[in-house]
Image (tube, rainbow, N blue to C red; front, side, top):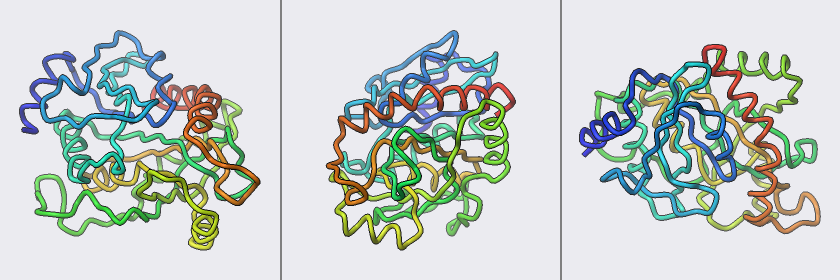
Length: 269
């Protein structure tokens, strides 16, 4: 099935030699507008490919160019709370690997766990805590992609993070850095859970990203991750988090993130 997907995608997108793939989170599809000479395939046209069902996730695979650098863009991701088996996410990463992708940029919308990181901020992910209870590597291991017991040290590639911080400084974009914690969802967290996550050392919380990063790290891909902070976690202020707020705040912050990712790719990312 993976081989069929690879052949279909190569043919329909007329791929040449993409090295970087970008996964776009809730409300962050605006990056697609920066791409030049694009070709697109809706996910539902790729046999065996999982589908995005959440508002703010268009569900299309796009080939485009940034400063003549070919990239693949997944405009819409797959959340475990939609009912997807974690293994499906590993399969998507394996498809990207077979297409020649060596570097994965992941973005998400997340809630802040401290008052200093305000909605509209961008957080560079330095590490993660998998609180979802799920793992895409469960089941038989294919040594073709990676070892049975992979290390997650430097899952978010240190050299890429440093380069990104340098670019943010050049562009005058404030960039927070911190630990992302994944919950299964789809409900937002309780105030008690937010307090617990703070004690665990997390700086932001969301419902995605970690399965892709685990799979990509297993495949020896370099990874760069960003959280767009869309709200405060429950109990930090007098608020009630909502998906509407998530999309609105993601849209406000997306312009800065688009500039940052675009410049990163231009400079060889």
